[in-house]
Length: 334
Image (cartoon, rainbow, N blue to C red; front, side, top):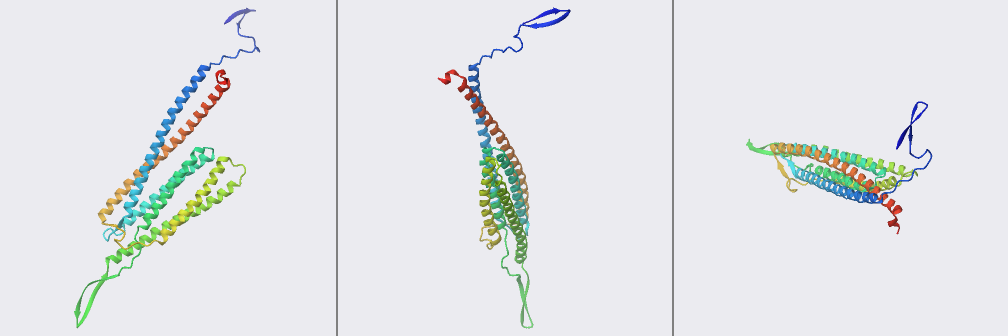
């Protein structure tokens, strides 16, 4: 409560509040409100845990659908081969599919770098996520190798075929021409050499990048000021590099030394030109759908990571509140 004083014609407001310097009484602690806040926060945490679990299931389901679709497309294309009618159309479609798989590796690799940076900054929960990205990258390498090996290589085919013959002056003369089968085999060999050469080059470049990465990690581990999270990450990365190199070397050997079985022995489907056009259209639609699905997968993962961090902060807050009650609640001390 305040009152007004008149001093020398001046209006002065005076207060009944304690004089300056006098300590105010400490407010009473509302223990019941504190306890209620703990209960409310526990409910909040349970709600966020349920929501985070839903996001996690959505990510797993979407990832499984993507992998099933990619695997199905690769197996379908690997089972097709060109006819004399389609010439090299099917092989070109396979090459486009391989390029898409390479682009997929680049996307997963970039996302993996983002996750690794989260871990380096202290997000230990993201450490287990690296395995999934590694699995997807290795799987794409396997699919590239599978498509590459499905492209026909050179076969021993007679260059000339008989078109009949005739007798003249008591001698038989046989007419011949270059066979269509030989022409197709030559086209297959040319395309196969190119695709296999590109695949081998990509695999070797990947191995070189891994070697550079290993050297960089070795240098980083020499830094004594590394955080524990960063040190754990780098050691784990070195182990993963060794496994990845072994896998790439095996695929490189397989791609560079594989020999195509004669036509029909592998159960291939030979397609005509119109069928090849239809397959090209199907592949283009599938590539677009997969790009959209992978983008959605990464957005969902980012949302999950933020939700996980938010939940972690809520749990830390709850732990602090419980500790406060433990120290200040007389009932808790008994």
